[in-house]
Image (cartoon, rainbow, N blue to C red; front, side, top):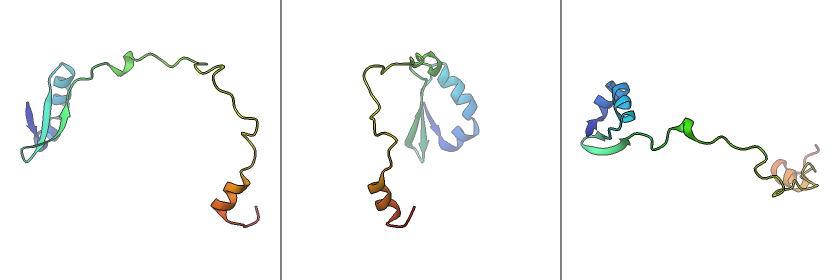
Length: 82
């Protein structure tokens, strides 16, 4: 169903409810489609939560991770004293 932008603004809540129930809407400006309002294919709360330790044993923090980046700091700040 095509919906004019001003009508979509005025009744957005109703269109969102209808979209959640399975309806599809094309939001148009001057009869030119600009956006689509449709139901989610999978509710966001149905996603699996991230598992802790997912990369355990697959990634190691380098020994020099916390070392100063003198070369970077000189390029970023210049040669001023720190």
